[in-house]
Image (cartoon, rainbow over all chains, first blue to last red; front, side, top):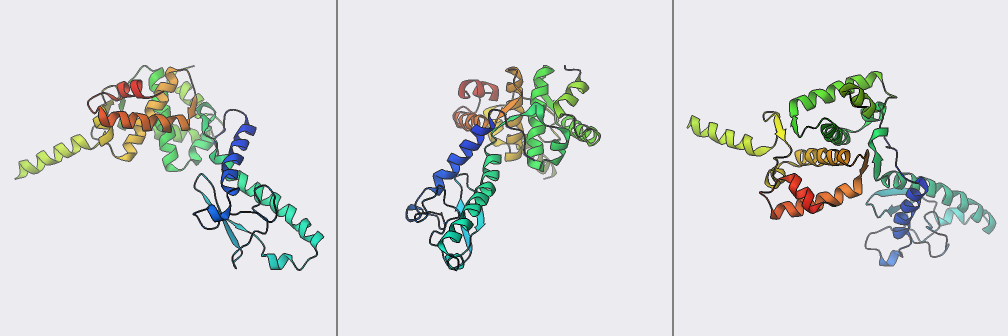
Length: 188
Length: 96
């Protein structure tokens, strides 16, 4: 589930790219972690799909600054060197593009740090992993407690309410959870 | 012997967390010490509940996760030094 981000999506992508490039531009020799890619001999930005000197295996691991590890399949230099120089370049460009596309997806998702809770639909709520679902439910509980001018919470009622909302959501996957709760609590 | 066991059980259940047995929790009365003593899951519940509450107070629907993390860290540090203060007071004094 990728909750919608607020703000300019380009900013989010740019930010993700900066986070990413901060690691990728780091020369391998200065990296403590093994496998940080440097692309000294291709000179391309990021250089994740370039032919930096690789160990014998086909796998290169890129560590993001956000702490995720991603294995990226890159061809061995020997394999590519069977082709002529021109063909080599032709192969490299799509690989770079593909690798960036793959890389940017998780980074962009993790860069979504502001979430408009009013836009979360029932379908999204039901698809959340348990921990995320609990956090969302707790946040909503706090939000509606303020609307209802309540500062105490009955934990059993809270659990029952969550079960009721989820049951309602099964039949209204396109509705937002907040609008459903507003209707249920008479808050408009 | 039996009474001792019952007393220990009662004390443990009282200090553990706002569990299902302790049905009503007044968020205004939760102290820093209480909150710090909760298990991680209950701490998180209070954290997100407070976030929702204060966002509603500011007429906001947006959860700024980075801000929440920053403020949680500030409040936690503040709470370690002011365990008798209530959590809303700590939030007022430490969060931005």
